Structures are given as structure tokens and as C-alpha cells.
Image (cartoon, rainbow, N blue to C red; front, side, top):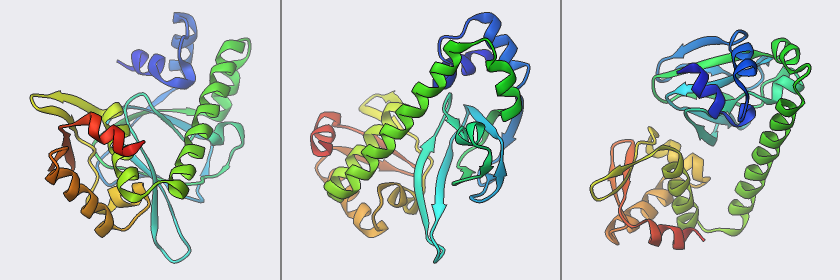
Length: 225
């Protein structure tokens, strides 16, 4: 399973068997229970992590103690990659929101592995550029889109990455509390719950515990645009 997880990770897509096997020799497994913090904002760090199974939330804390949820990451996604190129304090806190299995890779080992593998270096740059583009899109949504639109877009994004076909739609087990979902959207819990209730009343979705079933993806996509 590990070799397929690595090959599907954006940073290491398209690697040949030799390169993948050599990379795996540097990687170490790590297991997290729900609620376990992988690392905190400000911690020293020189490792990246590839998620094999499970999900984690990535967030930051304001000076007054409020939490801002930046994103949710799941299988084949990579976290902590910035410290590989500029080792230093972590810029966010990562916490498991379900039982999670990861593979870790140290900065020094990655540099050793990259020698003589220019295509792998290009993959790294491409993946980082995509991450920056997504960050820019998120900032733009906060400025230009209303809360219901952001809720619809967040649900569609979660469905693209974690959704499974259901008899009446797409089942999305996002593993987030209502408060965490509100943080992800960048709005109050009350405002996000109002948007979700409105979508449910219209028949666009059905709410479940730490999950949602999307019943009308086209309507949600139109609302998110």
C-alpha cells in the first residue's frame, strides 16, 4: 500500500520503480488517533508527511486564542512540505480528525534522494505552485463570495476528495464538527448552520453526524460559482 500512496502523492507523481523504492527506504510510518496533534504552530520542523489513510485538519491560532481552520487533508495528500526547503518553525498546527496513518520524510533524506532526479524536483515545484494557487483562490473567496457560496464550494471540495457514491447522491464523511466546518469556511457557526439548513430545506443535501449527503450537486455547484 505504501508504494501506491507515494506514487499518488502530488510531489512524487510519475516516479519510476527505482526512484519510488529508494524514496520509501527513507520514509518512516506514523500513526495518530483522532484528536492527536502531529505538530503545533511554532514547533521546529524538518519533515513532511504523506497521509496514507485518515484525515487531519490544518489550522492557525490568533493572538486572542481563536482557531482558524485552513484546510482538511486526506489520503495521498502531503503536509509540512514547506519545511523541506526552508527548515524552521511550523506555520500551522496539524491535528488528526480521524484515525490516521502517515509516512514521514526528513529534509536531509529528501535532499539526498533528489540528487540526480531532476524530474522529481520539477514535481516538487509544480505541487508547491498548485498549493499557492489554491491559497490565492481561498483568499479571493473570502473577499468576493458570500457565506452560502463559500459553504457550497467547501462541501464540493470535500466531496471531490472524500466523497463516495450513495444511493441518493454523494456521501461525504468530512469528520468535522459544526464549529470546525464554520472555521473552514471563515464564518460564524450560526451563519454556516443557517446556510446548511437552507440547502437541506431546498433538498440539495442531507446532514448527518460529521458527514453530509449531497443530493443535488448541480444546484450546489451553481450556488458556489
